[in-house]
Every structure is written in structure tokens, then in C-alpha cells.
Image 1 (cartoon, rainbow, N blue to C red):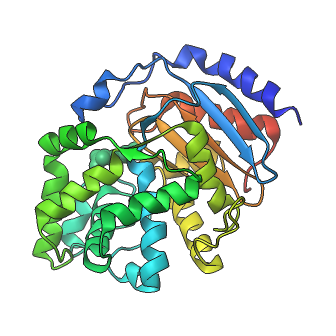
Image 2 (cartoon, helix red, strand yellow; image 1 turned 90 degrees about the vertical axis):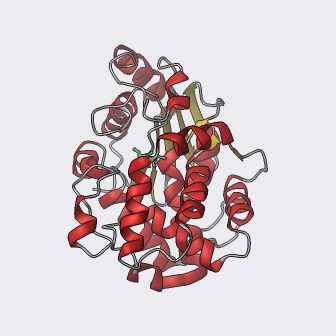
Length: 304
Ligand code: DON
């Protein structure tokens, strides 16, 4: 299959969509990003890479970070993680508070904000230096050390992160947050502010496509059972109240972020990452979703 040609065709087909989405502006620092950016990067398990567009430009990965947070935390704590966070799709926006109250402060899943905040709390309780450990983990997954948080983005989100603050406080009132509310929020905003390129994200996600084993370093990052669970949660919860739509149109497990990135995998075959900052109403990249739909359709590859 001529993957390069397919990616080039897709690029042309999504160009008219690039000015249709809306850049996330509830984090003021993200509002400055150029909406016309677009990148798509495909990386196979045989180590062939294909790309078009702005694939070597760093962007804010935001919620895509939640996959790394979950992977690192379950590799330390195992199954007991799921006692404090459920694994059901929420069908609600990523920053919704409504279910938390009548579900006793237990978030629906680790990929909505409330779930990732509980995971952050677990990391603070059980890691000696969660900041460093997390960054080192992501750097290992990517295979190099040029991965950093953008503290300007983290600070900008903190200034406006009232809903996330409300969630942590609500969960604390139910006893599902052990640490200081401010500490949990600060670390969570930092984790979301990590910047990566499409090609770096594709390298990190290829480890998940390879059942949790590094293709280059051959390290086993998560067990086979943890791989199955993380992939299942990506499939059912990776796109919030659009998880069904993403499965329907694209058919790959994946995760989006309000920075406009989407990372997806076809286990045993490839990882694929798109970046286009214009978002749809549900907070997922408009052109990114279309590009991935075109990719799985043109190549006839999906998990279904
Ligand atoms: O907490 C937030 O709202 C952001 N730091 C992350 C949200 C996000 O990326 C949701 N993605 N679609």
C-alpha cells in the first residue's frame, strides 16, 4: 500500500476544514496557536514512517497525556487503580461535573478530567517524585529526552481552571482525593501542558500498538492485561461524548486533546497521529477526525 500517497491525498481533502474548527480558548495560552497547522504521521511496527505537514512542530498534547498518566500509574499500582476510577464511557463532556455527585465522587473513567485528576492524586501519594518520574516515563516511551512541560500553558490553565478545581473539591468531599487540592491541580495542569510533535507522539503510542513493549528499546512498559485494558478504555472513552462517533467513523482506539492532537493505534500494525488545532463542538480536532476517518477508509484498516 502506498501510505505516503494516501496521506498526501488526505491532506488535500481536509484542507477546506482547517478554518472550520475553533481553537481552544478557555486556556488563553492555547488561543494563540495558528489554526491552519496540520500534520499527520504514520509509524508502523516495522519502523516505517510516513508523514505530511507540520509533523515536527511541538504542540500542547493536553488530554492525550492522560493515557501516559494511566499507563504509568497502573504499572506501579495495578488493578487497585480501578477502585477509585471506573471504566465506563461518560457520554458527557470531558469537564462535566454532573455524574460525580450522584456517583459518590468516583469518576466514570480515567480519560475525562475528573478521572485524570484522581490518577494525579494517586501519583502524588505513591511516587517519590511524580513530576520527574512522569516526564522520564514519557521520554522513555518516545526514545529521547527533548520532552518538556510548557509552564506558561500550565499557569494559563490554572488561572482559568475553575471547573477542574470544582471537580477536585467535590471528589475530596467524597474522600476520593487524598492530597492537597492545589497540589493535585498544579501537577495535573503540568502533565496536560507537555508538548510533543506528531512524530514523537506516534513513537510513544507505537509502544501501545506493540502491546506495551518498546519497539526500539524492547522494554515491557505495561503487562499484556494492562495493554488490553488501556486499549479498551481508549476505544470506549478516548473521545468523551464523541467516543461512539469516533469508533463509528474511524474504528481505532485513540485519544484526543484540546491542543488539537489525536493519537490512535491499530494493535500489531501502527500508530497514527494527527494535529490540527481547530476543534469541533465536543472538543475534538475537526480535521484530525476527518483525516483519520479517511485513512482507515482508504486503507481498509481498523479494528473492526
Ligand atoms: O483540563 C483540561 O480541560 C485540559 N487541560 C485538558 C482537556 C482536554 O484536552 C480534553 N480534550 N479533548
